[in-house]
Each structure stands twice: as C-alpha cells, then as structure tokens.
Amino acid sequence: KQEVTQIPAALSVPEGENLVLNCSFTDSAIYNLQWFRQDPGKGLTSLLLIQSSQREQTSGRLNASLDKSSGRSTLYIAASQPGDSATYLCAVHSGGGADGLTFGKGTHLIIQP
Amino acid sequence: DGGITQSPKYLFRKEGQNVTLSCEQNLNHDAMYWYRQDPGQGLRLIYYSQIVNDFQKGDIAEGYSVSREKKESFPLTVTSAQKNPTAFYLCDSSIGRNSGNTIYFGEGSWLTVV
Image: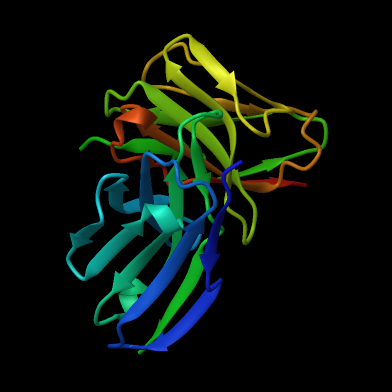
C-alpha cells in the first residue's frame, strides 16, 4: 500500500527566504505526483503536476522535482512572501486501488513578515 | 467561468439525522470524488464516480451514500449510521485520474454534529 510522508509537518521562516518542502512515497511505481496548496478552511488548489517521466516542473517562484527511484519529491519556493502561508499537500497517483491517489498530511507553512 | 461548487459551506447535523452535501461542476468532467479531511490529516476517499450512473466505494464509505444521476452533480449524503461525521468534506473533479490531468477541488463543506 502506498504511503506518503511530508516533512516537516510545520515550518516558519522569515519573508524572503528560499525554502524546500519534502514529500516521500514508499512505492516508486507511480503515474504522477501533484502538489496542492490549501488555505485555512478552503479547498485544495493545484500548484504543479509532475508526470512519472519528468524530473521537474516550474511555475513562477515554485519548482517541484521528482526522483521516482528514491521515492522523493521536493517543492522549492523562492523568495518567500507572507501570501505563501498555507498548508502544502502532495498527492501521488499510483494507479490501482479506488482512485490511486494517496495524500500526505501536509506541511503547514508560515512566512513571517 | 468553469469550476466546481460545494454547498453549503457550513452545516449542522442533529443526532440521527441525514444530511446531504452538494457538489456541482461545469467543467464537463466525467470523474468526481468525495473526500473527508480531519484536522492535521490527509484526505481520505469516501466515494467516487468515473461516469454518470456509476459510483464506487472508497476507503471509508460506511455511513455515507451518493448518487450520480447527472454528469454535473455528485451529492453526498451523510447518514445517521456515520457515528463520527464532524469533519471537512471536499469534492473534486477531473477528466480522469489516469490521464494525469489537473484535479479541481471545491471550497469544501464543514459538517458539525450538534
């Protein structure tokens, strides 16, 4: 059974810093991995989707990498801003099972002004 | 604009009562899903539907029921059999999971037992 772990569970950094969020998964046989942002009491917003054949995806100040063989993905946020404060979740699509998506518990990020 | 809408945002349920959460999308997506999210936890799949008039149980379907009579709508009923229903409920839609397309989530519904 696929398991997804996100470390750290919470992170607080000063504005302007570059930071890295980590996501690891136990079964490397995946179709894709997606990073989401969740604001308090809100739904999830898709940030980046990386197919299993890709190594990274970029959108603005965000860069997500995927190392399928080691079961790891990172989300890099450059020049962090207070508006980046949210919970970031990664989800792995492994196929099989009910819908093949397994979510991590998220990293709660606070950017201090 | 296209999107996915959940209602109500907040709902209170009395003991022994059934309540229904609405999820509507105008994205012309075939696949729709319901999740439950508890504080500090990841999402857990309740039910999903990959096409109209068909749906499947997820990992925690007990105490819940769904219908998919229209492509646009996938309502979730929380029955009195669900003993711990207080949670944040999220609905999503996509063209299909295997396509690797972006998943779109609604804004969620908070359900509280009173």
